[in-house]
Length: 138
Image 1 (cartoon, rainbow, N blue to C red):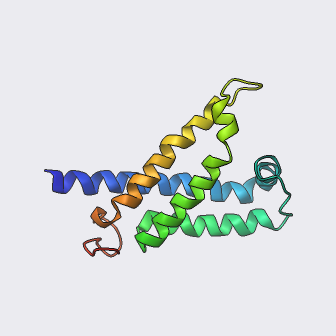
Image 2: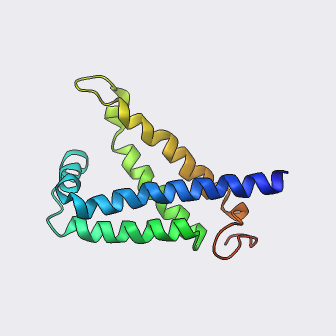
Image 3: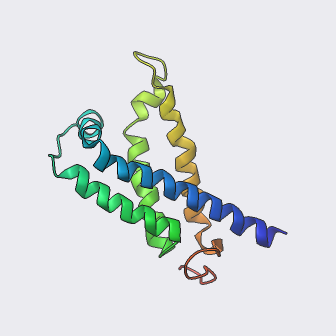
């Protein structure tokens, strides 16, 4: 039973995390001003008007690779790194969820980070992906 439940759980994780990244990638095209505001607020600089579409395209490519399970060591690792940075820059808001404004929704990024971490650690057991996953270190 475990042999089928784990791959199914990893498939669900991979697909939902891929959709999560895809939404944020598409947003960079639909509302690029949000991306610029996020960079100014959380990273302390303005990346310029070309950044949202470039970053959006890269994020969409990453999301598609994640959805398909391509090169899991690289794809899952980059997705984990990307979301780790995103979560780290929100630590001040995580530590003050109701002050001075409502920041409590930032906590949703923490279980998402845990899901990316679990998917990365268990990538070799992710059998229902392009390439099958039976190879060690794939």
